[in-house]
Length: 446
Ligand SMILES: [Fe+2]
Ligand SMILES: [Fe+2]
Image (cartoon, rainbow, N blue to C red; front, side):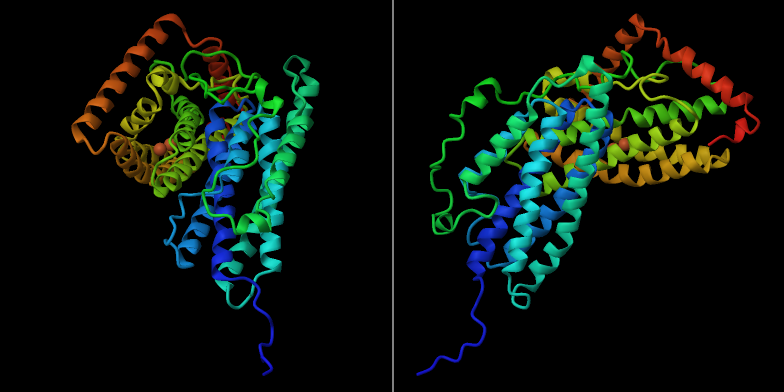
């Protein structure tokens, strides 16, 4: 009998979910690596741009995870029993030495391989049977290519600065790191794995010894700094906000913007816990990615305002993670709880700022605070949910912790204010404000 089959089948549901689970793991772990390293990133442009990528990565990972569950999962849990070899290679990425190597590993090795793997998936997919996946991946590829393009530009900026400022020249060989990672990825069959792996039972013991490589002997496991790294171009500061009576509206505008810029610490902590806590429910990673992205946007709102008034970042006004470092010695949960404690009053405070600036005719600042306020209402729920989760649902413990870290912060900043008078920033800010006021349209500036 002749079998009238027509076009042969291309890929089973089982094989599709196997491949998508690998792609999901790569998206999730590159996102977590960027999150964990953010606090250690020195370059200001890089630090403020990465949270946007982290959020995009979270969206793609979430869509993949949902799709995998549609493909007759959860017969195996999508968040467990990942390929150990692939996980081992992805775990190497955070052992980079500095910003340039971070970009090399994440973007020029893994994301390039990921974009290629998505293309292969599309080329060999049945466009009708697997149409929901095809639709997702067609949107993913241009987004990842755009991220890689951003990384190329950020790397070029780093190199230009290094050439200009020989004192901060990179001492490591980035090429060596890149080739080591490329080789490690190749040895495990790449992002999609080799055909042999596809029949290997999930979670099977690793047979590739990456840890033994001598290159790793000089790269100890990553330990995040307790004091978030700031751009070496920035002048030294102890705290970000002075105590001084505000007599003029322009001072109010300027200091509100300085406050916004310094919210980068509020991006660093949700990003860090994404990496530090590796056994949380998936929603946690999704929420933290959005949280970190929002705070980087709030920071950039301030940067944009101050730039328009002619202030040079880190030179004319301070950028320092004072809140973060005041309690980071107590661990990540304390820093996250401090952020949450501040955010409890966030929506009320930000909505008042919106009205105040609107009434004065500053539509630029009022618009910033209007959107900020919308974001803060979401963060309030995130903070409550996840700090409470870490405290095993103990509401009393949550209240005690919030109170204790706020108390610690108040003591810390009082001490810092006693030993530093906010100079030279105070004089520079006053001089800049005087110059703005002297301009023909000074009061309408910005
Ligand atoms: Fe914020
Ligand atoms: Fe917030």
